[in-house]
Amino acid sequence: MDHFLYRDGALFAEDVPVAEIAKAVGTPFYVYSTATLLRHYRLFDEALEGVDHTVCYAMKAASNQAILRTLAQAGAGMDVVSGGEYLRAKAAGVPGDRIVFSGVGKTADEIRLALEGGVRQFNVESEPEMEVLSAVATELGQTAPITVRINPDVDARTHAKIATGKSENKFGIPISRAREVYAHAARLPGLEVVGIDVHIGSQLTELEPFEQAYTKVAELTEILRGDGHDIRRLDLGGGLGIPYVRDNLAPPLPLDYGAMVKRVLGHLGCEIEIEPGRLIAGNAGLLVSEVIYVKSGEGRDFLILDAAMNDLIRPAMYEAWHDIVPVTEPDPGEVRAVYDIVGPVCETGDTFARARAMPPVAAGDLVAFRSAGAYGAVMSSEYNSRPLIPEVLVKGDQFAVIRRRPTFDEMINRDTIPEWL
Ligand code: LLP
Image (tube, rainbow, N blue to C red; front, side):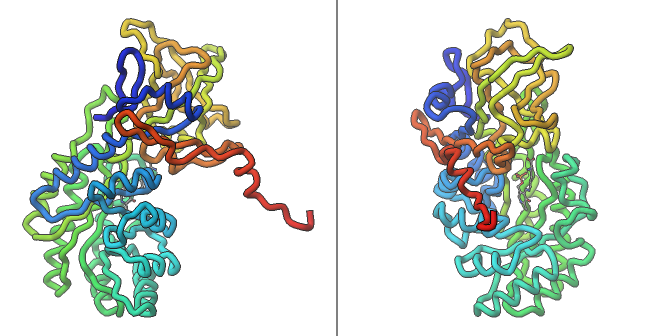
């Protein structure tokens, strides 16, 4: 559920007409709903009621500081995967002891940054990383809390580019080697093993793969405890999917996910951490764009938008579907037209949708991409020298620009021309 609904014939973001924001900031832009962000965070928080838990928002999904602060004020921790994300979370006011540091290639500098600024734990992904972490922590006279990310070799049944839990993926250590790796960790100075980490992929639409992975984590917890490790925290990753297509059967709800977690892992008495990203931010954001031209082609019509693949890469990268709706509510009985919906970037991959049935739209009309809050703005680029687009946050009847559109000069002046030219 989100807070982008039609009212009196116009699409609203909470209590603000989307067209009003477009008038104020120009198109294209991203707009997020505070109420939707908070609702989704709370769904997870409530789903884990009864067990000691922390919801660490995977900020890679949408990392504007205003979003981070909104969630942190509600009690969320953060899952970060780079020095930049770590510093951004800190800048948004998230305390270090609520920040979990994940990622397959943490550098010594990033590790130092997090140890100096405070961190809840590192989710270590390999033995070489463990050794670097041990060396940096020892040098700083600190003890770094760690979990080891295990790769459970489970098929997440999602898009190949976002599946992470099979043995051929680069993530984690094979579960078959877990005992030796934990023994290695226990021998290294400057490390304290606190638990186990797992994350099998993103946009999962069934609970079964999670359950398979968590069952393996439960077994491993007992085994590692038997080996003398104090396993007291389980980080279960993120990955629960969202309904991108409204008419489809919705993926399982956080409540069902939470019930499964408690059933499979509750008896262990561990603190539970989860790292949802998409489910918190995905349906909390729209990408709003204007139709520049309607162009008739050979046997098809193109809607040429002012947003492009550099603003929202998901359709080009994952063949992802985003519902695209007019900002002015269509009449229910209106005949639909079929369009290829594209951006102005100079490659065919800059296609948002093919043969999409839409209410007829004309040049100058506004359209909104639904479910664009996660992996939208964060994955954008300046390809074709198109400046990054603004982000806007709505709360009730107020809205604020939370990242403004840079000027062309700001973008261009980042280049430096060598003296010899
Ligand atoms: N934890 C870890 C360690 C992760 O790698 C990820 C996502 C998450 C949590 C959050 O997963 P979520 O709850 O959002 O599914 N750009 C792709 C998605 C990449 C996901 C990467 N890792 C997309 O647009 O679909």
